Image (cartoon, rainbow, N blue to C red; front, side):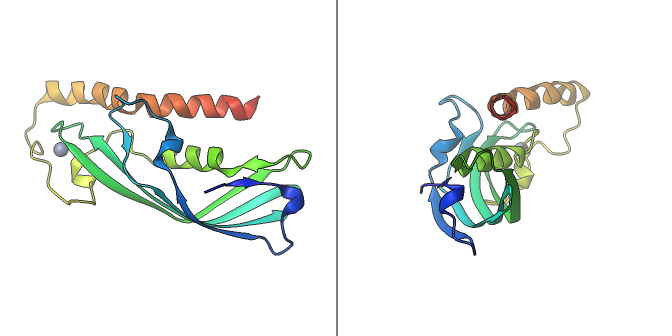
Length: 163
Ligand SMILES: [Zn+2]
């Protein structure tokens, strides 16, 4: 699915885009514990409002994580709906929506994944209730490590946009 928008070529009443994006757009490392496991369902309406591109619609995607408590793998489905986004148009340059969508989707991911939030195969975390202060402290650290790649990718994106 091509999400490159040419602001000059946009019909006055906007453009409807519907389809699937490859999970490959997240470009996460092979060994990253955070894994995109489904195509991204995209339904968007793109319209120009003077100096801005106004995007509305919905995004659906599934990620796989390692639970910070029991260390087991689980999947979580995300639905950004309604989804909206405003992108400034600079000199009528084409805009690739993929970059923007990618950032918003990464922001929607939990920094501390917990398998009880998995909604693909609902379950109770087997480690829930086993209170261990040492493990709880360690868990915060592993939670950070878990999301680090995704956050790194996000930082790079923000830098790109600022420059
Ligand atoms: Zn768990």
